[in-house]
Amino acid sequence: MNEDDVLDVSDVTSLINYLLGTKSLPDITKADINGDFEVNVSDVTVLINLILGGE
Ligand SMILES: [Ca+2]
Ligand SMILES: [Ca+2]
Image (cartoon, rainbow, N blue to C red; front, side):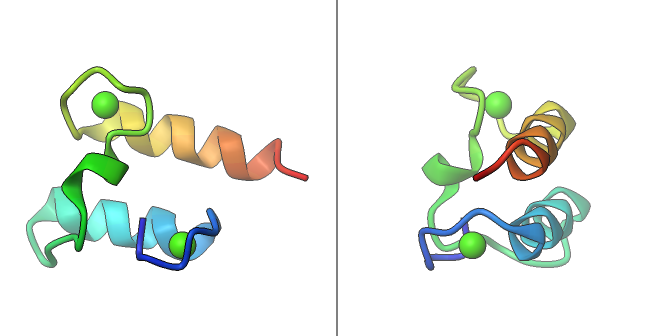
């Protein structure tokens, strides 16, 4: 999400900031976590689940 190729809480922050319109993302296509061609709160949910279920 934020170009380090590691999904962690900083990516959640980046995505939320993007959704709030406070920051842009370097690669919008990576922000579409669930692949439905939209970047929205459902991607935040999926991202959090990925992080919590990670390793
Ligand atoms: Ca990251
Ligand atoms: Ca999506």
